[in-house]
Length: 388
Image (cartoon, rainbow, N blue to C red; front, side, top):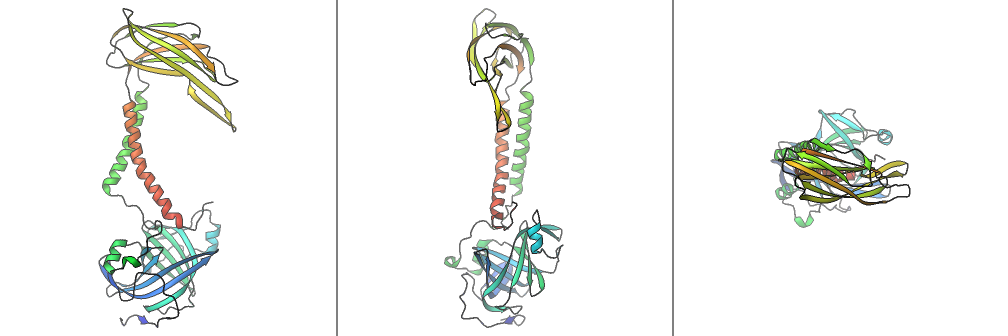
C-alpha cells in the first residue's frame, strides 16, 4: 500500500456488498491510472424503503484520490472539490417548504435538486485517506447540472463537496478487468446520462423544425390566394343555381365553394360543370355539415358551412349548375339549411404537398425533442422531489 493513505483492518464479521470491484484492481479513467484501495458499503432507510450502494476509494499517484460508486448497476466517479456552492448547504426545511426545486450556484453552473437522505456504513475494508468508522453517519444532498452532479455531504459537523460524473460503463469494465458475471445490469436511466447530440444531429433537428414551420406557413398563405370570377347572391335552398363564368388562368386551379346555413344539420348538393358548347366537363357531389353546442360549460363546434372543390380548367367560358339534393337535421335543436351561395375563383395553387412536407419535417424535428423529453423524464424518475 502507498504510504500516503492509512490502512485499516477488515471487519470480517460483516457481509461484503455485491460489487464487481476488488481491492488492488487497477484501471484507467479518462486515461488516468487508478488503483482500488478501499471499499465502503452504505445503507439508507426511509419510509419503509431501503437503498444500498458501495463506494470504492481509488488512488492515482498523479491525480490523488477519488471514488468509484456502484449503485443499482450504475458506476459513477466522484472527487472532492474545494469550490463552495452558493448557498453552501440545502437544509431539510428548505427542501420541504420550497415551491420549486432548490438550486445552488457553483463555478458558473446552476445545480438543481435531485435527492437527499441519511446513510450509515454496513461494510468497511481496505485503505483510505481518512479513518472511516462503523459509527459514521452522513447526510447528503444531490444536485444535478447536465452531466455533472454535486453532492453536499455533511458528517460530524463538517461539510464536504463532491463532483460526480458518469464514465463510460464499457470502458470502465474493460480497463479494470471486471467480471461480467459480477457486473449487475443498470436499473433505469442514470440522471447523469444526458443525451448528447452530435453537431450533425442538431443541424438536422433545427433544419427540420425551421423548414417544417416555414412550409406550413407558406401552405396556409398560399391556400386562400385566387381571383374571384363569379358569386351568386344568397338564395333559398329550393331550386338549382346556374353560375356562368370565364376562366383566363388555365395553368392554375379553379375553386368552387358552396355555402349553406346548415345548423346542427347537413345538406347535400349535386354539381355539374359544362363548357361553352354545353358539354359536361366535370360532375361532383358535396355535403355541408355543421354542428355545435355546449358541454361541461364549454362551447364546441365541428364541421363547416362551406365546402370547396378544386379543378383544373382550360381557359374559356363555363357554366356551373348546382342542385340541392336533400338534407337532414342531426340534433333536436337543429334546422335544415335555408340559404345557399356559390363562389367561383381562379388562380389557386395546390399547397397540400407543401403542407404535408411541412408536417413531415415538423414530425421529424418533434421526434428529436420528444426523445429528449422522454429520456429526461426517465433520468429524473429517481428524484425524491415532487412538483405536486
